[in-house]
Amino acid sequence: MKSRLDDLFDFACSEVREEDFRAFCPEDPGDMSYVALCAGVLEKKAIPEDIDPEWFEIFGIAQRGSPEEDSEAGRFLRFKLFCGAVAAKFLLVEPGLDTVVIVNYVCCSLIQAARAIKEQELTEILLGVFPHLAKEMEAYRAPSGWVVQEYPFCLFSGMLMAADLEDHGRVADLAGQLLKAEEQVREESFFPGHEFLLGLTNYDSLHLDWLELAGSLANPENDGDVRTVKSKLQKVERWRAGKGV
Figure 1 (cartoon, rainbow, N blue to C red):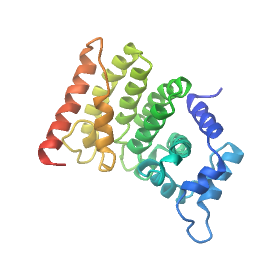
Figure 2: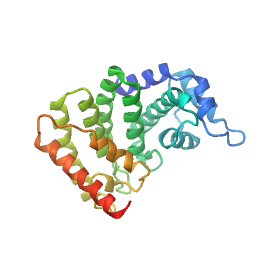
Figure 3: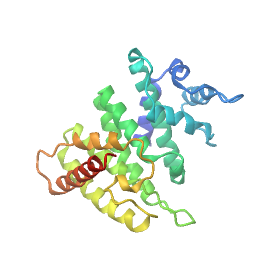
Figure 4: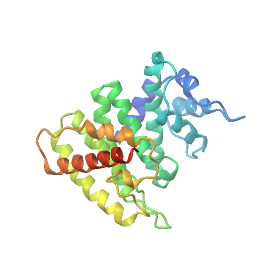
């Protein structure tokens, strides 16, 4: 039975083209072709069993980069979505990859792509994907005791997708899950920062993007948990503004 993550991967593969890889992949590192890695996945419609570390360079461009020309924005979105879908697949196979496949970057890039593409089907798919990823990563425990500290970002991402679909009941449900998960991770993680949610990661390149996304979250039914999430993130934004961060 296909999962929503399979649906995301299929959707992304149907949108992207090999010329998009040639346009946006970083320059090839010697004898290994970044383009070939992406094109191979697109051709086979499957992720490789062995994860080549060169993927992490590709993800970095997709998650934190931008097209050089405005005319390439649509193509870059397809590339971003494809990379996000592949990264999410990697995380599902091996949640312990979270130290190199950065969860909050994956989530943020997928949300940004979905909001720019503006197709309800994609938003509905992601509403299924994000909570599923959170559940899988919550259950992961490395032999060292390491936990996936960033999985609450998946729950917040689900809130945003539910809000875009005006599924206010789902937004409220995920808000309650987020508050509990964020507190739990703080108890189990190593040296969390004091900021709500954003303090669970040292990978902060997209923190301003997250705060902007948080500002877009509406609460028309004035749900208590949603209100609490928004309030906590607004405090983070005010603190960062005061510090000039």
